[in-house]
Length: 76
Image (cartoon, rainbow, N blue to C red; front, side, top):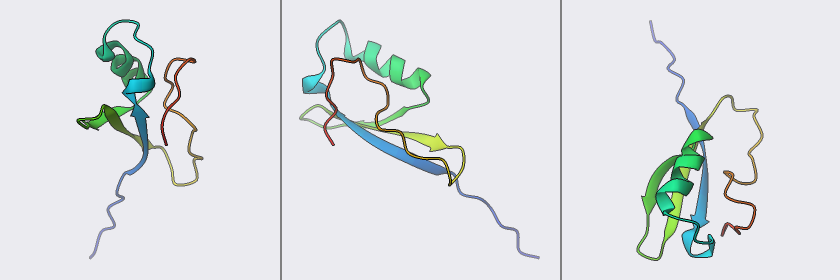
């Protein structure tokens, strides 16, 4: 008997950390994003942060932004 294993689905986001106003450490921003379910995947040499978070179901709509501070402008 074959069993079907549901693979988790993720949504992805990238944020240009160069456009985030300095208010302390970048770790503070990443901690806030982590509270929203976002997981850091990588940060490139030019300060682009790539994040992912699990989507509850395939029918769940993608959110616009992972919740950076209101003054930030995420690069897409």
